[in-house]
Image 1 (cartoon, one colour):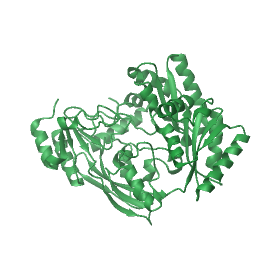
Image 2 (cartoon, helix red, strand yellow; image 1 turned 45 degrees about the vertical axis):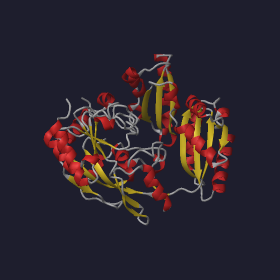
Image 3 (cartoon, helix red, strand yellow; image 1 turned 60 degrees about the horizontal axis):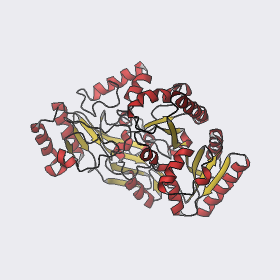
Image 4 (spheres, helix red, strand yellow; image 1 turned 180 degrees about the horizontal axis):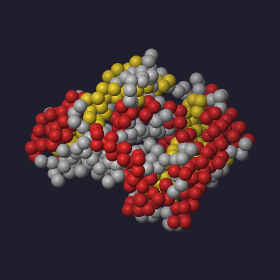
Length: 462
């Protein structure tokens, strides 16, 4: 049902006409990853926590659904909105309010992009400790709400480990201030943890205090072909545990993924690697570029002697390094074969070869016309699986999800590693989560959002 005109007018008054966008204006915006993100007919862009509180209090009283949005880069449908709901964009809460280089903490608004924080932190020799391909668009509020991981999670943890404190507006407009700036704090229940990974279903994150880490030194980068997954795991383990180097990234791609992206980008450096089933992107940091390159060459030479490395290409310039990262982060597979299915799983590193080999075999036995592409963060066992055919297969998500999740729990893995549940994985959560977990999640939701206005329809199974 459309939003009543009286409600729309009252909500616009709360933030000002210049901070509101109606349906016609929304049509000109980029919807982000999901074309349904801008399905609502009204977007409000509050500039302060107080304005967020007033909007939520009004919507709660009127039982109007509220969909919080950041950079709209989420991959699980968590920002999808519908007619009758209100989009609450946090893009104007975009100030880095304080930065303490000595304590290594920053207080930022929910609308600050990950890239903006990384730039400022880098000027002080620090880093947010988290990074991924959507860094230029993804906002801190969204990154926290989805508990994003990325390529550095094997070193610094997911976003949950980066958050020291939060300011959150609850569904009824109450402001919860848990903005601590210390790493040790035991003051009863850690309430801020409830909102990390909750995807806006319990409240709206407006500010965050984040723990920063020292910035890594110059990096040496290589694309490395390995003979099989067991060799990839052995190489990963040797690099992570080596006291002689600092491994900053170890990403994995199936050969068909690397071939598709390098072909689309016109990057030929990858060609010699594609005879192997998997390609790794490895990056090592050191105080100087020369030391980083020496450590990388020595490590790869030793791995070659052990039979783990089939071929390697070292980046000889910053431009070549960036090209290698584009091969890993580009989504050419989906442009080449649109309408495919994405899955996001994590498996304990030692069990990853068994899982991936079994999954690829299950898909082939189920339907030989399907293709499987793999990329992800090898260091923490998080892989992204794309399954597609020569035509769109969007309607087959749950069918293939059963193959993805088969025996995943038996391997102590997860069907939702870093992209969240949103709309996409609701059915899988309902199928795999325990009755006790689902019941407790519903009780918490009912306690914090009794009228069910916060990001309605997301995460919890129907």
